[in-house]
Image (cartoon, rainbow, N blue to C red; front, side, top):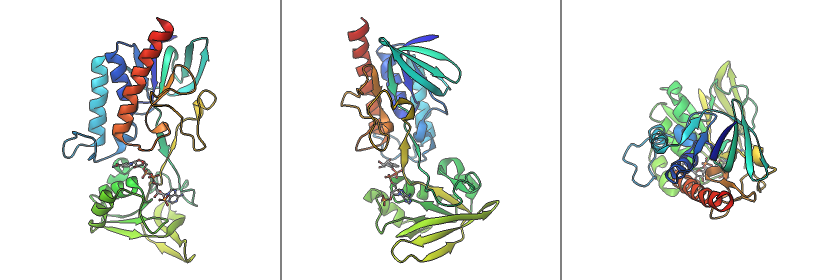
Length: 307
Ligand code: NAP
């Protein structure tokens, strides 16, 4: 059993900031991350809106710098998946796929995962033309035609990134206006490689081993049309990764964890940070801010309860 002051679950910007602030407060802390550090930030190409980010800052580089800074100040890292967590007396006991931990306090920074559309063919062609990450898979669609599904910031930003590789990018949105920020919409509308299809949902993703087309349904007229595409990139939002904590903290109807301004949850000693928290604005900067606050709150909690 390994013992820590603070175990941070999740290595995105929220978890990495929590690690940095915890280390600077001299808390013995570890960041558990089942994938690679960085979370969604590591799969985002251009970062334009993190204050101070230089031109052409990319997600993988920024998350690597965040991780390096954490390690420099003393955070430990483990590539492990959390399987269970329980509280006995004042201490938390966590089991991962590789280790067992005892902690005085916990920060949940598990973030969220891409949502599926739920149409026919989506599961079948996942990895065979259906993708949820333009940075990871865009390269495979060089000079090909792809469809991006969704109308938020992710759909338009990732769609614009894909125009650097693909010869044509259709953006299919279920309404007649985008949810994305106006500044992002303006850039997308000015991109000659993008074409916008409104009021339409994907009925089916089709192919022969790999994707070769989609069937779209116009939600106003009911009309079905076929579109030839080589790939489908789905950006219809994210669902929070909170299932393991359902019995310990308060969770809203979608699955977001409720935390207050100090990132405290319903369970004493558990703090929440980043995209898994119910909040208005989900950005790298708000995730990083949450992580800093959560670590400082954990420090105060440990001083009050254990010292
Ligand atoms: P989002 O804002 O929730 O947008 C999801 C989009 O997908 C919406 O346009 C929605 O349509 C559509 N949609 C949802 N379910 C669908 C379905 N089953 N079929 C078809 N379309 C569906 O998600 P996001 O764009 O991933 O952004 C998530 C958060 O991250 C947001 O807070 C966003 O601001 C932030 N973010 C920010 C940046 C940036 O600032 N540069 C970049 C990426 C993400 P409706 O509009 O009709 O609901």
